[in-house]
Image (cartoon, rainbow, N blue to C red; front, side, top):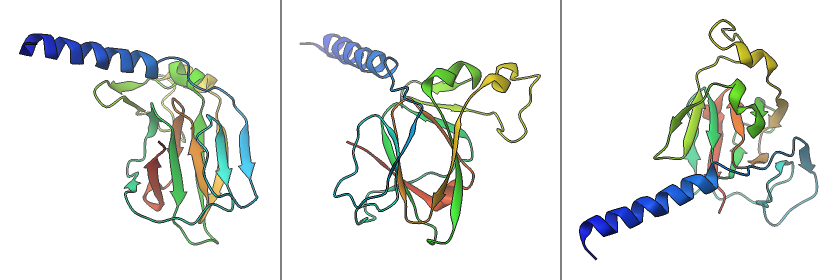
Length: 167
């Protein structure tokens, strides 16, 4: 196999992965709350808050740093590392709202974002945003929530949330 064939094969595999991630996102718009102790956090395609999460070992966690509306093409779990008496405001938009969020795409990283300021949206520039629907909830310190793949996320102060990709 020469270099061109290898490159073409890799490109085909990448295109198939992109097609898989751009289709059939979970769209269940219910916020589930697990209020019993859990041994594992499930990757079941449901938007879930774990009020009593398993013990967290803060290794290999990534920090979410941008105050933007983010969309991930893989499920993620978010751990709120503020003190227990504090809370963060979280906004999530189901995949069906993508058209209302005017996404910008980084195809290489399977990642999208939106520049809309959800508190002061420019309706002239983003007229469809006024039609968007979202779920808003408070994330209390030491809680974890899972975000299904394809969903959009905005966290009011992301520097207090650690993220980890679910496998």
